[in-house]
Length: 207
Image (cartoon, rainbow, N blue to C red; front, side, top):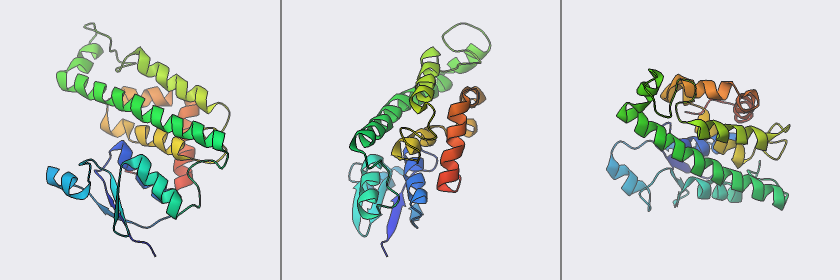
């Protein structure tokens, strides 16, 4: 049996994505969470986490980790067997992570500077109690709803790495951010229902 060690900071979206992939494939693993900046450098050749140790092979980067998991443990696959669908799923994964990582960083910067609170008190600026990260953020959520369409998962009837990427960005939103951000998801029922289906597929809540 293969030995898997996952080095991952708790709650980080890219960590959640890898944990969800491991859960979907029903793989056992040892989790080690960093306790200091030195752990990032010690555990990953890039200095970034998550990283995975698979039987002594260190694999950095969440996207590459999912590739390696599919190579070694192909059932269930994390992309469709149809090359065109698989390409769409990979593209959506990359788009979701680039787009919403940007918005998360923007939000955290605003939070640190008190701009979100100012918007709540109605003192101007682009933020408000219904949309603290701006109108563009709401439009990107609408994009996700449109990409999903009538399917239970993105471009497929079974979950893929695209669905795990979406789930990882939003699964802890009410816990770690302004409650209005969680409400933005809840107002979009197809998206909130998709989150529930992903969690049912992986069989647990990922933290």
